[in-house]
Image (cartoon, rainbow, N blue to C red; front, side, top):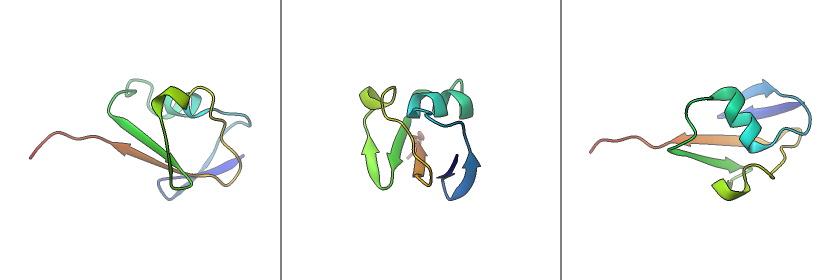
Length: 67
């Protein structure tokens, strides 16, 4: 199925959860990440159960240090 990740088309398997997507894209970066799907923030506690759907618009935001 096709989704949009940070404005880039991406093909992923059907029934992927947010947690599975992050493990596929960033296997070592599970901290400091915020996820929004269709402009709705998905809490970390819901990542394992939140299934992605075709044409979802996913925004992945990494926290950075600095000032």
